[in-house]
Image 1 (cartoon, rainbow, N blue to C red):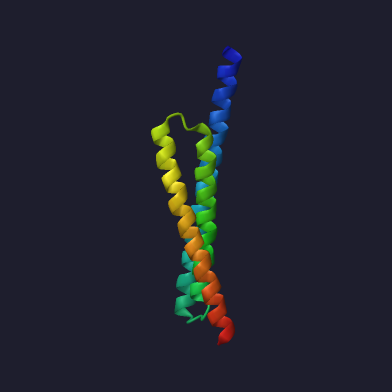
Image 2: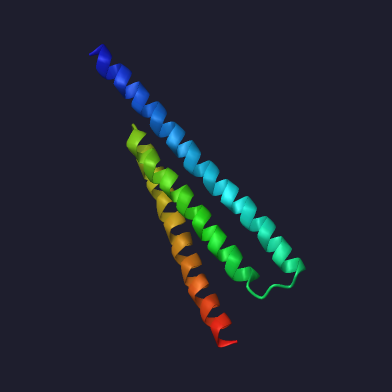
Length: 111
């Protein structure tokens, strides 16, 4: 029994570090994208909106992956409901941003 408790605590630690890593990667991607987009605005780059949307989408996908991984260690239904709502919202945002990317790519190819 003690071995199972020890294994479970190691598993929870690994999952928590995995969630932290995925969310940190998402934040770093968002910062890098922001800096590139600001630089693109200053240079009057026509594709700055596309670059920003792609970076935000990639960052959101990492954050969404962290949320999905977090479901592994959820203990109560109330936490699961909140986590499910966050996953749905982030999924909807990702869907909208991908739609924006396709629209922007179509606009750029027309010009």
